[in-house]
Length: 348
Image (cartoon, rainbow, N blue to C red; front, side, top):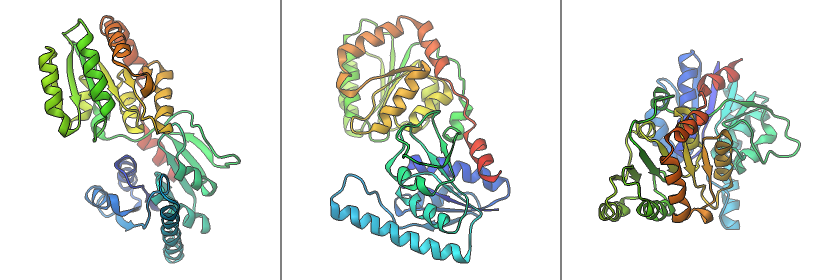
C-alpha cells in the first residue's frame, strides 16, 4: 500500500509522524513524507529507509498581518494545486496528516481524488489548521480522550489513539518513583521565564532543603539560577538542555512544566505527577493541562495565579506527603500504544 504522511513545521508534528512512518514501513508499506522547509533536515535525517520525501510550500496563517495571511493562504493553494496534479499521476492509497498548515494541501488533494484521509490532532483543543482541514477528513485520531472546539457539522469519525512518543519514553513507562525527593522544572527547548522567576523564589521560601532540583532553562539564565540556588543552599543542577528527557522525568518525584501536548503525553506515558502552567496565549495548552489534571495526576494552574507563595505552599504539602506524590504518579499513568493504534487504523 502507498501511504502519504503529511507533517507540519515543528518537531511536535514531525516526531509522531516519523514514529508512525517507521511502523508502516516495517509492515511493508511504501511511504512518502511531505513537510515544509522548516523541518526538511529533521525529516531527511530520520525518515525510514526507502521513504520518499516531498517539500510542501506552506507557512502558518495565524497571528500575522492581513497581507501575510493572504500570502500564506496563497502558498497553501499553490501547494494544493501541485499535489492534485501529482496525485493524478501517482495516487496514494492513504493520506495521514499530523497537523500544521503544511498538512492542509495534501489533505485537500486527497479529498479531490477520494483517497481515504486520516488526521491526527495532538492537543485537547483542536488547532486552527486541523479545524480547517476537518471538512475533508474521514477519520480524526486524537491524543486525548476528548477534544474541544470541534467544528459544527464535522462528519469525521473520531478515534482516541493517543500521541506517539519516542522509544526512550516507552522504555521508562511505569518507572518506579525515586527514593529521594527530586523536583524537575522544564519550560521546553527555549525555557519559560515565568518558571525561572517563580520556582526558585518558591523554593527559597520553603523550610525543606532536602529536595534536589533539576532546572532546565534558557542558556542566558543558567549562571543566574546557579548563583541563586547556591546562595539559598538549595541543591540544584541547572541545564540549558536535557539530553535524556525521558530519564530525567523518570528520575523526578514531581515535574513543573508548560503543557504542550508532547510534554503532557510524555508525563502520562512514564507516569509522573506534575504542576502544569499553560502558556497564557495558548488555549491548546490550557486544554491539555486540564485533561491531565482530571486524571488526578496534578495541577493545572493559570499563569496569573502561579505565584511563589502558592507554589511554596503546594510543594511543601506534596513533598511532606510522599504517598500523595506516588498516587499522583499512578493516576497520571496512561498506557501508550499510539503507534500501533494509528497504524492499525490507517491500514484496516
